[in-house]
Length: 343
Length: 259
Image (tube, rainbow over all chains, first blue to last red; front, top):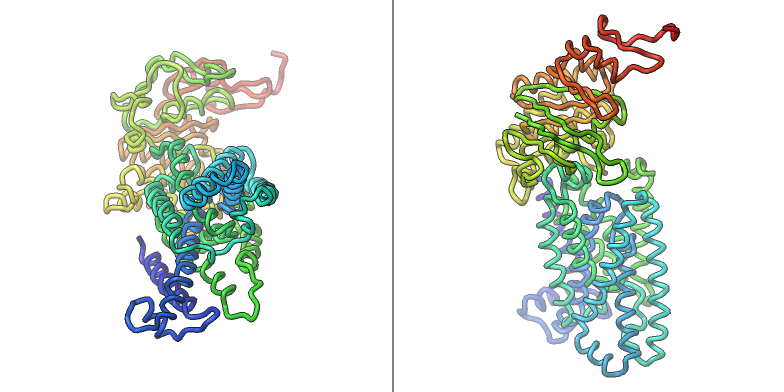
C-alpha cells in the first residue's frame, strides 16, 4: 500500500469517527459529548443517556457505517467486473432485485397462512437476507449477461428501468400481501438505517464480513481484468471463475443492505470514484478500504442530516443522497474518458 | 525454442480449420515476422501459440513444454502478448498498466518485490514510456498506448513475445522504431519474438525469418531474401492492381494488364 492510500485512509477514518460521535450526541434529546462518550465507554453516565446512545442511536450509526462500507466495496467490484464507470448495485437494478426477492418471499408467506408468517418473522434475519440475496443474484446474473452485449450507457439505462420495474412489482406484491394479512414489511420502499434493530445487526454484518474477505481475495486477479478479458487470461487469470467469485462477493455485500436498510442509492456508485481519486490508482486492493470508508462516510452523513434535530422529520435518506449523488453521476457521464469512448 | 508440430488452428464453428499441418520452429533470439493479408489466419495462429485459443490438432511447445497444457500461471510467466484489442479503463494510469505485467510473479496481494520493480524499470527504459508514466492510459494516443502495451509485455520478462498487428495504427518512424526495438530485445535478451504484420517492406528488412501465409491455407517459411526471390511473397500479396517485384524488394503498380 502506498503512503497516499495510508494517509487518505487515516484521514477518512478520523472523519468517520468524529462524525459517528457527533451523530450519537443529537436527536430528540441532545446529549453533551462527555455523556455520549461516557455511555460508550461504560464509565460515568446516566441510565437514560446509556439507553439512548447504546440502544437507539448506536445501532443506527453502526448500520449506516456497515451498509455504506459494503455498498462502496461492492461498487468497486462491479465497476471493474462490468468495466463500466457508472455500475453499482443500485444503478444496475441489483438492489431492486433484492427488494423484489424479499417481497415475493413475504407475499408467499402471507398467502401460505399465519404459520408461514410467524416462521418468517421468527427467522427474520436469515430468511430476509436469503430472499434478498436470491433477488440480488438473479439481477446480477441477468445484468452481467446483458453487459457483454450492450454498451456502458445502455446497460445503465436498462439497469435503472429494471430497477423501476422491480420496485413497481414489489409495491404491488406488498399491497396484496398486506391485504392477505401478512403486513410485515409494508412501508418498506425507502432507504433507512433507523430500522435496524440491535438483534439483526449480526445478520447485516456477517455476510458483509464474508463478502469483504471474498472481495479482498479476488482483488488481484480482478485488477488484471481491468485490461480486458484476453489480457487477463494472458496474465494467468481464469476469467470465468473470477467472474463468479466477484459476483458472489458483490451479492454477499449487497444483499444484507437491501434486506435491512432498503435501496440505498448512489453510495456505491460514487464511493469508488472518490477512492480512485484519493488512491491515484485503479488497482482494486487499495481501492477497497478507501471505498469502504468513503461509502460509510457518505451514508452516515446522509443519516446525520435526516436525523438532525429538525422540528419535523420529513427528510428521506435517498433524497439527501440523490442531491449529492445525481450531480456527481452527471459529471462522471460528461467527463469520464471511459464513458466517452463507450458511447 | 518454440516448436509447432502438425499444428492445426481454427474454430469449432462454421469457420472451421484456418491453417493446418503447421511444422515450424523458432530459436531463442529469433525475431520472426508472420506475414499475410487480412483474413489469412495470422491472428488465429498467434492466439493459438499464445495459449489463448485451443488448437484443433497438433502441438505448440515452448522449450519442450506443451503450451496448451501449461498451468495458466506458468504460461503467464513465459509468454507475453500484445493484441489488437484495445484495452482501456477509467483512471488506469500507465504505471498501473505496466505493473499489472508482474501479477504472475507476485503474491496474493500483488505487491511488488525488488525484482519486479527492476523488470518494470527496464521495460520502461527500453520502450521510452517514462514521459507519460503518470498519465491516464485512456488519454494516450494510439502510438503511445501501443508502446505502453509493449512495455507491459516486456515487464512480464517472457521467453516468448507474441505481438499481433501492433504496428497497424502507427506512423512510419514509430513502426521502424518499434520493430527495431523488438529485434534488439530478441537479440539481447534471447527472447523469441513473433510479430504478425501486413507491413511487408519493414518485416522483410528487419526480421530473421518470415512465416508467410498465402491466404488459402498454405504457408511458406524462409529468410526474407529467399522468400522474395522464390516468388512466394508475390503469390501471397499480388492483386490485379499491384505486384511484388523481387528485384526491388517492394511493390509496384501494374501499368498494363495486357500481359
